[in-house]
Image 1 (cartoon, rainbow, N blue to C red):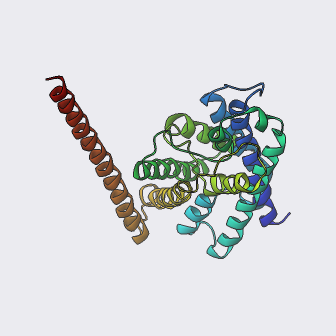
Image 2 (cartoon, rainbow, N blue to C red; image 1 turned 30 degrees about the vertical axis):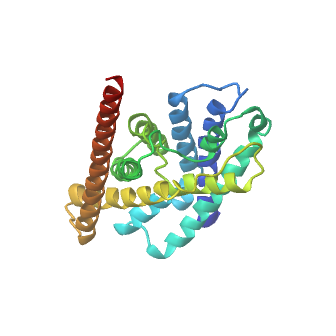
Length: 283
């Protein structure tokens, strides 16, 4: 098997099992409907583990452009292979999304909520706040890539490594997934979102392209920063890229904080104005 085909199949398996579990807990009349967040995080963790088990020996099972770019940024992966890996991951994610569509074929009609249908394929924030949502994806993917690197630095019983990686995904989902649904993988979000846009899903809404850049850009920034951060603090290699990415992340944190503060002050002012108007009317 070629590395291209391995990344395609590995990502396809990841999306089939990951988006599949979301379909199970979200779509109406599914036997697992209402299974909740714990079920979703376990499904995604096991989906990643199975993808790694399937193709890890062939391609290294990046199955995530953020991982590929992160590893390349610290010299752990050749840059000339990056476009090929990302193309394979995107194709695998689109195919995986299409397979999930067919798996739940009768349930699209039974489900009235267009947002719920989209949620099977792609992420959407619990609270829409662009800068904060971006930071959430940066942090989640930072932990993912740094975690992959420190997991890889340990010796495990043969065959155990993919299971540990799966547990890392579960941990990120449980602890950090609440704000945005933790895409932490540009292919995992963009590929199925494209599938959602193209497939004849009964009663679907739009594919929320306004949000689509956040689960792509955020994981790329977080993945690269996780890799250079690991290289700096675990191996003592403080590269120029580390300092550049540190500055970028600090700026993003500052922008997100300022945006939330601005919204808070605007809300307080609006509430105060409404209260004053109500008091004036009563008098």
